[in-house]
Length: 253
Image 1 (tube, rainbow, N blue to C red):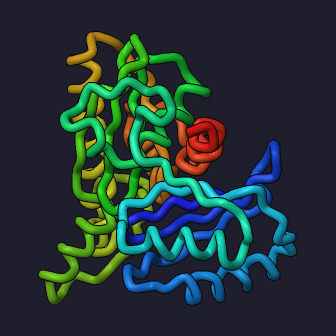
Image 2: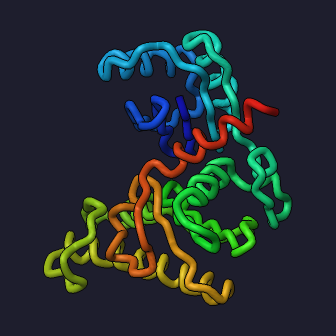
């Protein structure tokens, strides 16, 4: 099982040798105990009829307070070892970032999975609580990237400070000229955010001196394919794919 523990959501996936058997998404609760996580996972396993015979758990976490709970659920309930991806050195990715160990494990997982899809140079854009842009050059070195406020966080800040503006679904409208307050909000939020993504990707490509492929991932990434003209493709399972790919190296440590 692969687990991507994010600030807002945690994604769980059960890998069956060559394909994803199941995938679940749950709000991240920083105070969760292993018993609370296990109770929820038991229900998910039962609903999807997943047998409890797993070889291991591999995780990337940006919430250190949950690391022990993740380890314990593997050992206590699944009766299997737990491995954490922490930094690029574990999987042979050269990291030109200071300090190298400060790069989030989810970002390393994204890069590792992207390497199996396209040849460097490339850019991975992950739409999460924050939207991250991760850049790999033609040598296969992780250079760094950019971090911007996620679209959900940005829109929540707007709605929280404006009494008369209604909350709207984060969907790309058909046109930029909104003819009602909800459609005008959708236009500003979604096209504005797509424009910001395009601007950053364009600057990165200019600095690389290359039309690097830009891959999108994350819960909302698919909504921006087409709206953000610089994004070439969407890969919803990229982070979990990278964790599965990292497992042999982590076991060998």
